[in-house]
Length: 464
Ligand SMILES: [Zn+2]
Picture 1: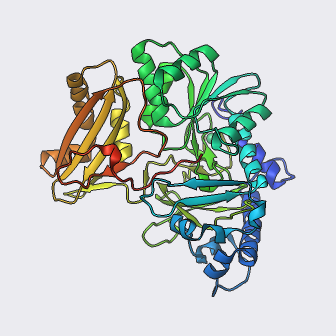
Picture 2: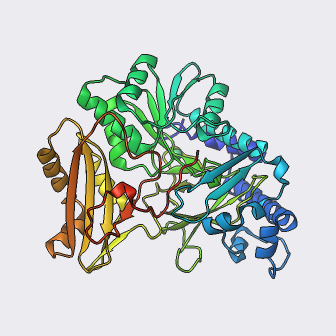
Picture 3: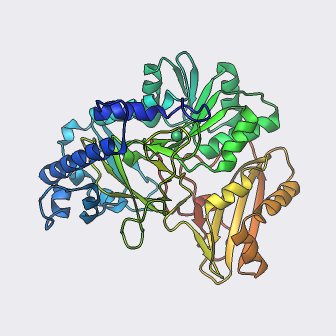
């Protein structure tokens, strides 16, 4: 334990052991030395065995990195590269691949994105999940997993394997599709903990609160999408539990980082991933503490190493020490993706995160989607909300009041450069939308009357 009784993140001891540090405590120098050594190995191996990297690095001097910042001389990789040349990334034969994850199957983004993992790559994920969950659950506890888990090697099944190693009991449920069914299961199983997707879990909690389900939990982990602070607050209030956040994407091998008891940003999985923050426009590294795009390089991935992969997530390194006292780096929770801020006239902007923070506190709200048409000078924003326990007019009034807390929306409406319309529906038992990352959708129809959910998404993905 350190300062104020906050336990140090369990990731530190794990990373220290993975790095093989033989000293009383882990330091930044240990981590940096290890990362430099690993980066050299990864680059050498990619040059030698991967057709994609051989082409990409052609013309770059074949000498080893002198220091970590030299990585800045290497080109970035992107989701488009994976889509177009996925198999060419491999540094092993296809026969060694045990799991292929296909993403973006909606077809709007062209070819689907495929990620390839070997058994040892999957073992790295299970090991990370085990360490991460050890901070939330103890042996003998029951954990409901509301993530896709039907298939072998899916995020839910890897998490279940990790929980079994901890001596905990996973209950694999999959994504929520029917609210009363899942709530009834939670009551029947008397789960101690739960892992799920923020918007889905909040919908469960608000629906359960309105329909009189009395659910209590000890801990809860939110994963797969950004976590609005309003969601954590509501879940703590309704279920009386500690709420932890996980940051990850399939490309990271599902896991990237996890917050500690201080709930002050994600501690990063630094033995397996090297993180950078860059200016999304220039590609240059930004000074520590400044916001930019999250870029990572895999340090231990066997099948399909990713070098300087651009995530599209915007965040920053938190430079002040975490209250838990760890030396691990800390990333601020992701609040937006590149290109996801909606610009309105008068140099104002807002993002889905701003809407989330304003709306998710409303007790009757089960969920909402937002769509925007910003092609004209006066932009249009349409909110489609689902409510339980409130009539449509009352829900409309409370959403109206909440939207006044978003300065960009309030100001733009006042000077008539933004028009907001609202559709409120009463929530039935079936939960929709599903597990895709939530975004503000683009309203391309001129009449704006078409249902949001049929509109193309900018980016849709889930690690499953
Ligand atoms: Zn911490």
